[in-house]
Length: 543
View 1 (spheres, one colour):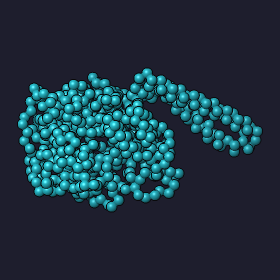
View 2 (cartoon, helix red, strand yellow):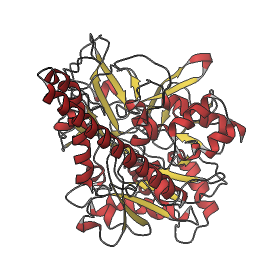
View 3 (cartoon, helix red, strand yellow):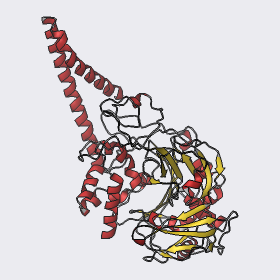
View 4 (spheres, helix red, strand yellow):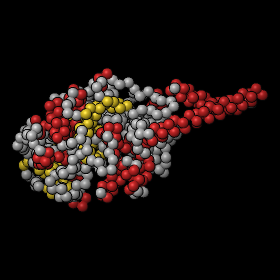
């Protein structure tokens, strides 16, 4: 059936070209006029059949959604696409095939070796935490010596939640932002790290309440992310489920198989701790895209429900995985953690210390040597990029190119970031760039011949190739987001401040990273991530 669909498309194109060219042939005589009439009739029939097929496919998809069929895991149409083959190494666990999404292939991927970083300054930044007081209570002063795990500040609204030092050293700055808000607490790290001592916790016999208090005092608690809203959870809350995605499909994202190497014990211990924090399930999202199985730390993990995902970005997003495993409904609270945060959690129990060591991918075509480095949470970007002769038109991003934040060399990595991307600033105009697509660039549009070379990598820049325009309906968002959500209607409901429609259209299931690809594809150049955050904050404030 898929071959039939391709044939219909090709016949339609042929008929269209014939419709344009045949008036010229018709001038040669009566036979040409008859030929033109026949071709126009054939084109009309083909176009009519194509329209009927398209409408039928859409109606089948709508009916499937009404019946509760997962339309993203399987293609519901009269011309079904192949969902793909389940890899042999995925036997024994469920698998979800995602047909929507798009992989942006960029130059500047990190080499597979991990090098020690030269970073000496680290910071914890209160603005990284949604909902925290703009001016939290800072418990240290400039010149104080701290150990890794010592408290730096706490939220005045929720004083039980402590934010701790990622490294030992001297507090050298407490930088402020707008309206005297606390922007960052900076530490000059010791050459030899010192760690705060913790009493041993009996995970097998300790109560959940004691475990929560132990995590609150240790500094690990802020690493837990609650959905909806992407906030640090309340200590008294118990999540419906906990989700961990073991792979990242964002452009140039770090390989978690490399990240977990040598830290397998800490990762498993972290999963064991998560299992004590919920009466529900701990879900582990596994990568089924490759020819080889992921790391044993993931595939052999115990005490969790493992599920495989295969598809283009954003299949690695934990929000997409939640949607297909156990969606978030009104009133639900689920928790998520990244692989590196689970390792830090496990190290607290297996090593007895607050160890924020992490592997960071330095990526991007503007780097002389893209690579992995081993450092600590919140490292200074200038220190990490030392030795890289970046020109003045290079943009530094903490995170990936879709959902990361623009930074400078003087800034620090965000709390959850494990990637730095450096790309060219796109501040130049391209004359008739939309009309004469001569230069290849990352794009979902087939105006550019990218689809003919699917493995082609691009040297991207930050140029948006257009300004913000009328918010038109294109269907682009729906093809980018493998979730049973209508993002365009959701965004318009946010702009209208319609609480009921926001809830009904699934705002609780989304985070900024989930709509980042939609923003990339948006013809109207709408700031979808900022819009979504505005809607989430509104819903959170409404309670």
